[in-house]
Image (cartoon, rainbow, N blue to C red; front, top):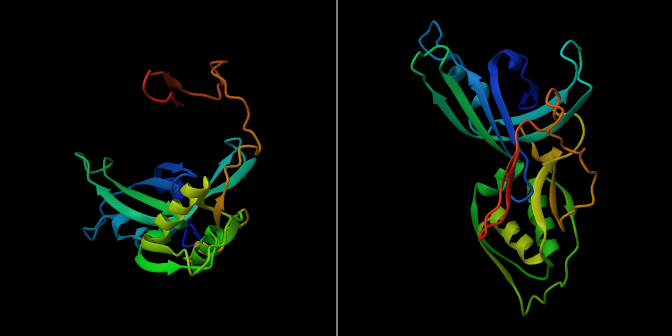
Length: 240
């Protein structure tokens, strides 16, 4: 866990829960729960800690390995973005029931901060996406689209956030539009954009497949819990 590109050295003792939700149809997000206790000065340690302020950069990696190993066998950065909400919770017993709940979104949240009114002409949809992503410093993974519209006959008008514009362009091309982190080491600093990639392309279902999921043997399953629901008038739902 990194805050503004600096390792959080006390994460093992402070973090009680951490969830990351990766998405291609929306912004990826995280939820972090930190133990919180009062200090001698009358404040609460996690609240007084300036590391967990709004729009601080948060980078998260997950690893797998033996408990007694010095380093994980497999490790990958799964999230790079910003704190967008901070919620202190004071439980009935105060300690240890109190916690600081921290929520955040990936670097695409930068495209939600401002609503704009502007127009684009003489560009394809992919050209508009390149221009918008470029304004934030994202690397590009953008698939070409056609046509390049005649400025005298067709103008794309934006009235809203950059994120809403890109999602509209993605829907009319049948594309995915999302931001994810590049592979590589975590760089220092408070800006996640230089280490992020803006995607705009058709879905890619032919990528590497994950291993088969199994419910048995009961001692070492890959699936802990699985629920399936069929309905006559709604899509099938599976939760695992």
